Length: 330
Image (cartoon, rainbow, N blue to C red):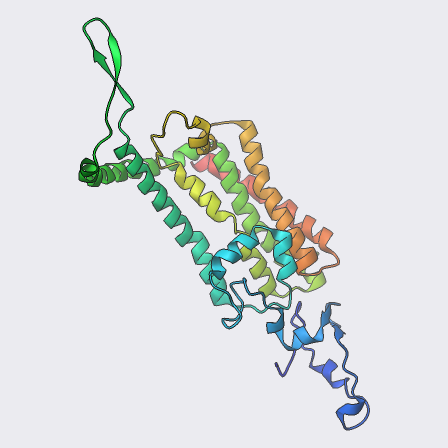
């Protein structure tokens, strides 16, 4: 139990309120111990049991939960739960304990480890498919006309014999494709997706801290803002993997597989106003819904609407600036 409890939202020292629990009498028999408290600094109504013992508000699947209460695979479970903003912020409250090291560990998994593993698996799959699947038919001259002649697939021994050379050739192609990836993104829907995601990921928390109409009114502690900004990028591995797919040739697949199912990611580099608008709106809607749930449910702010507007408008302008940067430099 902490000797000096603090307000869950603004971190205000609540030691003075504890002294009022014994206004009369020298013993605890006359004590008045309320179950709820009201912070005189930010106006938050909180449970005293959670202010005195924050571990009671821990959630077992949350990565920042204490080790004794944390379940296995908490990194993965936190990632899945963070993709549902309302569910996430109903479980993760202001009283939930903070662990910055575990938060950074989750960030490393989502930005580096998981996308790298998935892109590597897709690369290996593409090489294996292109090596093992020979052309389905070949044209042969029968003396009067060209006819289709089926060709057998390579044996397992032949497959493993040519696999090292196939990996080497594919790595050389991947290096060339990555070098031209920036030029491929110029004036494409992918540029809209990346620019708006970066603008919202940086703009929303920055405005919450900088603008006096937002954070200063409800006095949200910086630790809560940092936590909300961190888990807001839970969908980022999807963006990283999608951009990685642009540099990997997947296939060949059997002819019965629809081409749209195989090459859906190519729409990101095909100029299209409709796709660009959709990819511009997708991250915007995600971050608006995330911070709406964070401000209203997670932070329990009464003035969440002006705060949300003050965050969303500058983030949209920042997205336009990033989009012009893509156009001018790529």
